[in-house]
Length: 452
Image (cartoon, rainbow, N blue to C red; front, side, top):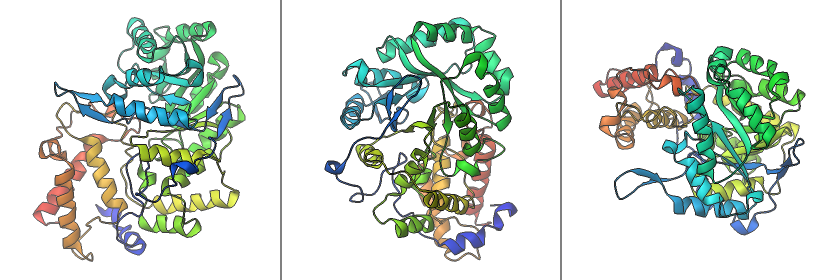
């Protein structure tokens, strides 16, 4: 909203102000009537892990965004019946890779996944979970987390086990979490014993951080690596926070290390693209959904073992199953088209929030991801009030204030952030959360006072 964004006004004007075509829920569903019927689903695309022979579904289930509800005591709990229904459909349609963590969904994700998956023969699915020892670095506390995951997931081995979100802080942070407490030696012994079939890590960080982790390959022999990969981050990752996925992919590919992909839809942002971008997609393929373009981009890279989607609703799951069934990789011309779209979208002044919820709960009740998602949706839809000279400024101003009040409860709005900075260490995108909240709050105050 300050001078660094003024140069983008003409761009926003040129691409048009309107609602997002094909916008949908965060996990990537399309509007009613736009997806294929379930009966048209073909055979799920499988990728072979060369080290194990595992036939892994190219669509993996990310167990981070399952639906929550209130129990009889008013506590937020996972809707287990809904999870069972989703898992049943996924299993019936060839989805066999399930990724969870002790940190997901207020610590409830592993248990919910264990309940749903244990109804099937263990050989029919692959479990991926993580050592999410954020802030708990002692050997005893870390091992307790490890052993509890077996109990929660109702299994006696993990197919894919990850060191969770390493990279930030470089090797010193890695050593503090896993080396100084001798946990790496413990995990290597667990892999040797077969309780961990494949050992890897999920990465967030700068290129130098990744290079340092690759230098440890000979010592630890990473079996696989999970990276944030999508057509935006391929070449347009924020260099202050992340590494271009193209670089990560190339480094892993030349070492023949299998890749699992997180955030193929950037927390749903690539299912809710600006209208001009969705129109270009529609011109090329009227039947393809916005989300399917993003998934096809990721799946077209052969080193990718599976692409995770946090599918909250059945329509998300059905659509994504259709995309990855009888899968059609992109050709070079289509990949170039995606690069052009990424260049267009990079012009939008977005907050790089993927709605992962790692920053929650805020000790002061601020709905951090909700505020960022509202802001991003306004920008994406071309409804950002910029100044009084803007066409339909009054309408856009009223719309922003009205939708903000409806989306975010008054006691959870940005003005309640006190700048305690407790959220920053948990953000895998390294967003300066208090500063962004303050910026949004100041912007909203200007809208209210009509001084923009």
